[in-house]
Image (cartoon, rainbow, N blue to C red; front, side, top):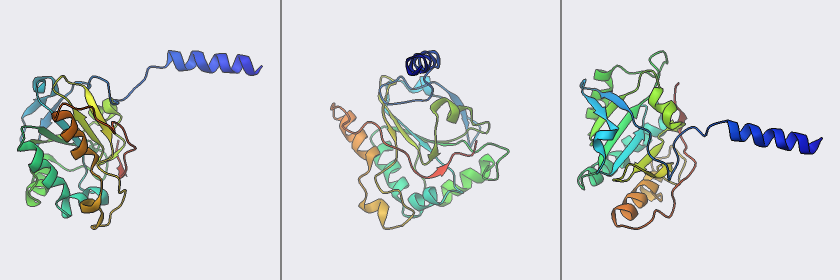
Amino acid sequence: MKLVHAAAALLLSLSVPVLGATAGQAAPDFTLTDVHGRAVHLADLKGKYVVLEWTNPGCPFVRNHYNTRNMQGLQSEWTGKDVVWLSIDSSNRSSFDFMPPQKLSDWMQARGAAQSAVLVDPDSATARLYQAKTTPHMFVIDREGRIVYAGAIDDRPSTSPADPPAANNYVRAALTQVMGGKPVTTAATTPYGCSVKY
């Protein structure tokens, strides 16, 4: 009987496609509109390093990274090295945390955000494509369009302002390694933060 159950479980696992985006995979393509109404198509960015940052201004974890200027510091550091940094708000338009594009733009601008674009995913379709779980949830994509890092921004799952500056920042480490022609030593971690508001 145990053998039958094991065989059934194996068949089920083989018949269910693997969803989401993980390190080593090609990054799922998407087109989203930014807060200024411009379309951004991931496939058009092939040949560049790209960071995807899932965000939600209503989340205390996100606010901590912005209030300490940790996120803006990373954005500025890496966009200055020709990395395309895309912040994606996938809060569903039916959720309490949904921000209209202008309000989201104003929030980012007030904090001196330095990403390449702030994208709105109002039906959460792109979040589902990547299986984004938290805000923040970070992905680093190489010039060939493959994910080289997926997971937490750092190793301090906290809302304490003291933690971001002291943390081991996985995104910085991944970008430093991949842009230096080295393999990313920590390619996947468990993301932390608030749940994406699907």
